[in-house]
Image (cartoon, each protein chain N blue to C red):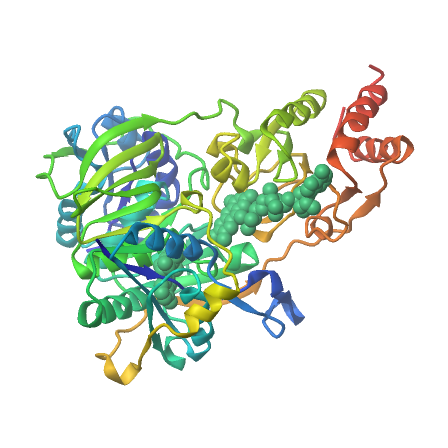
Length: 255
Length: 318
Ligand SMILES: Cc1cc2nc3c(=O)[nH]c(=O)nc-3n(C[C@H](O)[C@H](O)[C@H](O)COP(=O)(O)OP(=O)(O)OC[C@H]3O[C@@H](n4cnc5c(N)ncnc54)[C@H](O)[C@@H]3O)c2cc1C
Ligand SMILES: Nc1ncnc2c1ncn2[C@@H]1O[C@H](COP(=O)(O)O)[C@@H](O)[C@H]1O
């Protein structure tokens, strides 16, 4: 049964980002979470493991990502690797993929790697395919249905393309990126959390890895793009709704 | 050697990319190369729209996937050494772009909304980050500069008759380890919500698929189209995905957007930036759609929508 790696990112919960003075982003009240679609990646990895397989959850990030490791382990992974360093907090996709590839190549045996289609903060949709290239393995992205062939050794994946769906077959080792519709991620219960505390976690330090290359994508500016309008609120009586419709007419939104 | 490359799987996408491609080309000189499958129309059309060279991708066998072009294209781009490579941000285009960028050891700005050469000639791109809560300005430090651009970001390039250019054909690459077993066409809506004047958008506040009828009736009295949130098209599959509005869907710019049972998470709201009037019906007074809306009704959509339909008819004297 397959050895699966699930890559997850510990990201800022965007719902808590405020608009600061002069349109800057205010992160002072933010909380963190496992990137939305990486919960689907973790779930799919656990589903593909079957009997006798193994799932390793893997993240690269700043020291705060340690909190995410426990969350990932309560979502079905058997063990976790975390490459943590303050310098890993905001890597560009080239660097992230390079660190992930290095950790996987030197430390984690694998048949299948599962990534999310895109991360909650950057949504670059790059790290998965880049990681596959760095490892020199095939890549199937935007997968909505995944099956490990009964005889093992390969996957059959339904991937989304513009005209519809392409069903492809690929041999191990292979990387897939998954769409949110692929599964419904579990909500970890008390038992999952207790179990998670006993699972092995390996921390990889920056010094244990070869020097990281330069970022190839430079952020020049980051500005708040919140949408705020002055909402007039109406009730639900027919009179209220008639006033609502009158407002629509005044605005020229209905003829 | 300068030069701009454009890679797209469909003709209309290549024609759109020729717009920014042409601008960069005019600023930097060099050749403009368009790479499209040979099934995508007459190469003369691309040349008329600004291409100096058209490289046609030969027809692949049924078992091969578009991604098989990766090694050949990486070699072509290395040899030509263009300053920039632009790809259409389709599913295949985004994957190809990321893998090409890895092979070319360069940076890639994904899903760019704008792209322009700064005073020093550096290309600066704008894209959304944090689900749409932030606008990120980026520059690529490697060569070539790579960017993916969502469909409909730019209008198709204007054509100039009488332009000249060269056409060549890339022979299909050898098979790789991926094998296509089947292809299924997916249902697409014939409606184009990106161009709709009025959009009634349904969210997960809708209890069951049959209730779409209620939203359709409202859209009909308003003379508008139906759109939806990602969970409706993607998880529940009640509507085709080309009706999904937001970060991973379509950007709409109607005169009126009316959300029914839409919570208004930033990933959805970011698709409404161009809407003139944003209205919402949601039973949760704290739903994030309200601060982003102009007019809101706090209430149950099942109670509100029939009255709304009646009142609109009345107001129209119908
Ligand atoms: C990287 C990324 C990209 C994404 N891209 C997109 C995108 O492009 N488009 C998109 O839409 N989403 C996108 N999402 C998902 C997005 O974050 C939200 O999860 C989604 O928009 C929520 O959809 P919803 O409003 O239909 O559902 P919910 O958030 O579940 O909201 C349902 C709402 O209905 C209300 N309601 C329930 N019953 C009733 C009733 N009877 N009457 C009135 N109101 C009722 C509830 O109060 C609630 O506010 C993306 C997410 C991520 C992480
Ligand atoms: N720092 C990270 N650590 C682990 N996995 C990551 C990291 N960043 C991105 N990924 C994986 O790559 C996917 C795509 O990320 P992105 O290219 O940033 O959109 C995510 O869904 C994750 O599966």
